[in-house]
Amino acid sequence: MIEIFGIPSTALFGQLLLGLINGSFYALLSLGLAVIFGMLNIINFSHGAQYMMGAFAAFLLLQYLNVNYFIALVLAPVIVGFTGILVERLFLQWLYKLDHLYGLLLTFGLALIIEGVFRDLYGASGLPYRVPDALTGGQNLGFMFLPNYRAWVVGVSLVVCLATWFVIERTKLGSYLRAATENPTLVRAFGVNVPRMITLTYGFGVGLAALAGVLAAPIYNVSPQMGGDLIIVVFAVVVIGGMGSIMGAIVTGFGLGIVEGLTKVFYPEASNTVIFVIMAIVLLIRPAGLFGRRA
Amino acid sequence: MERVADPLAITARRNGARSETIAFLLMLAVIVVAPFFIYPVFLMKVLCFALFACAFNLLIGYGGLLSFGHALFFGWASYVAAHMAKIGVISLPYPAGWRMWGWLVIPLPPLSPELAILFGTAAAALLGLLAGWLAIRRQGIYFAMITLALAQMMFFFALQAKFTGGEDGIQAIPRGRLLGLVDLNDQIAMYGFVAAVFLAGFLLVYRVIHSPFGEVLKAIRENEARAISLGYKTEHYKLLAFVLSAALAGLAGATKAIVFQLASLTDVHWTMSGEVVLMTLVGGLGTVFGPVAGAVVIIGMQNYLASVGEWVTVIQGVIFVVCVLLFRRGIVGEIAHLLRIRL
Image (tube, rainbow over all chains, first blue to last red):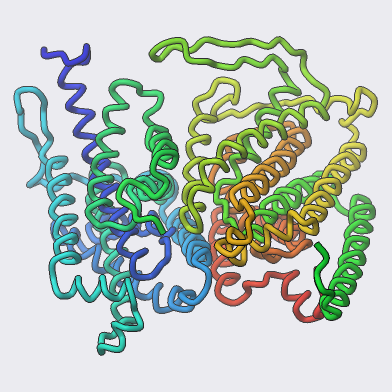
C-alpha cells in the first residue's frame, strides 16, 4: 500500500474523489445562483429546494412513468425549470423595483413551502434511487478504485459548467445576456425582449439546480431536506468566489469541494466548517471575493 | 449643531411620541393583565421572542442590515446561560499543537439565574463583535449570506462541542433564585422577571432608535455613500448596531433557556433565524411595536397549529410570500399608515 503524508493513498484519493463530487454540486449550484443574480439581482434562496425537486422529479418519473435515468437527466431539469418560469412570472417579476432583500425573503418563503410540502407527502427519511445499470461498477486505477457513476457525475458537471460558460461568454445569445445585465434599458431599446430573457434566465438557473439534483439522486438518498443545508454552503462558496464571474463560480466550486475532501482526510472534525472558515479568511483578505469586482 | 426647525417635522414628532406612548401603555397593561387569562409559560415564550425580534429589527429596520444568522446569538447565549446556571465551570480550549487542544479551566460554581443570563448576553455580544466585524465588509445580499454562513458554522460547533450536549442539548437547567432571594420556580415570579427583562430590552431599543446614534443609522440605511461623505465612519456605526442587536438577541435566548430549562440545537438552527425574520416582517419592519405584534402572531400560530405538524412550515412560507408581495408594511406598519401615526 502506498502512503502519502502517512495517509494510505486509497483513503486520500477516495476522499479527493468525494470532494470532487461535492465540488461538482457546488459548481453547478453556485453557477446557477450567479447566472440568476446577474440578470434578476435576486439571490435565489429556493435554489436548494429546486435542487431537491430535481432529485424528486427523477425519482417520481422512474416510479410512476418508468422513465430511465438518462431521459430523466434531461426531462427533470426541463420540468423543474418550467416551474421556475412560473415562479418568476407569478412572484418574482413584481419585486425587481424593490430592495434586493425582498427577493431573498420571498424565495426563502418559497423554499419553506416546497420543502414543507415534499416532507408532508414523502416523509423526512430518504428514498433510494438506483444507479443506472450502464454506470454501475468501476475501474481499478491501481492507486484507487473509481466507481463509474462518480466519474460520470464529475464529467457531466464539468461539461455542463463549461458549456454554460461558453454560451454566456462566447456566443451572440450570451452577449445579449451580458449586455442586459449591464444595462437592460439600452438593450430593450435595441428591440431585445429583456423581460422574456429574464424569465428564461431564471428558468435556466433553476434547471441547473435540478440537474445537480438528478445527478445527486443515486449518490445521496432523495429526501426533502437534501437541499436545505447544502444551499447555505453554496452561499458561502458564492461569497468566497464573488458572483461577478462565471468561470470564477465554476473554479471556486470545484476548488472548495477538493479542499473539503482533503480536510476530511487530515482534520475530519473540521470538514463541516472548513468552507465557512475559508469564507471568513477571504473576507478578511479580499472582501470582494476571489473573482469578484468591488461594487 | 442646531438645525432650522421645520414646524411640520416637530408636530409629526410630537404626535409620534404621543401615539407611541399610548401604544406602550396599552402593551404594558396587556403584559400585566394577560397572565390572569393566558397560560404564563406561553406568554413568557412570546415575550422572549418579542425581545429577539426587537433586537433583530434594530438591525434591519433602522440600519437596513438583513442578518440571516441571528439564531447564532440567540442559541449560543442560551447554551452559555444554561451551562452557567447548571454547571458553572468554564473550560476554554486553546490550540496546543496539531489537532491538540489544551484547556484553560476556570472553576466557578453554578450561578444564580441573573448572572447566568448576563454571561449568556456577554457571550452573544462577543460573538456579535466577531461576526459583525466580518459581515459588515460586504453590503446587501452578501451581508445576509455571510451572516447565514457564519451562523451555520457555529451550528456545527454547537453540534460537535461537548458542553452543548449535541442532539440532547442541555436539559433540566435549574431556574434557581433571582439574586438569591426570589424562587423562580414560582410561575408568576418567573413571569414578572421575564416581563421586566423584555421591557428593559424594549425600552433600550426605543432609546437607541431615537438617539443621535439611531438617526445616523437611519441615514446609513437610506444612503450609505452620503453618510460617509458627511464624515460618519459608517462601519463603526454598523458594527455597534450589530453588537447591540446580537447582545439583545442573546439576552432573549438566555432568558428563554432559564424559562424553559432547556437549551437545544433548535435555537441555533437557521430555521430559527428565518422565524425571527418572519416575525419582524409580519409585524412591520422598522416599526417600534411591529416585532412584538409579529412575535404574538407567529408564536400564537405555532401554538394553535401544532396539531397540523409539517404544515406549519408551509404556512410560514406562505406568510412570507404574501407579506413580501402584498403586505410589506406589516401589521403595525399598516395600522400606522392608516391612522397616519407613528408606532
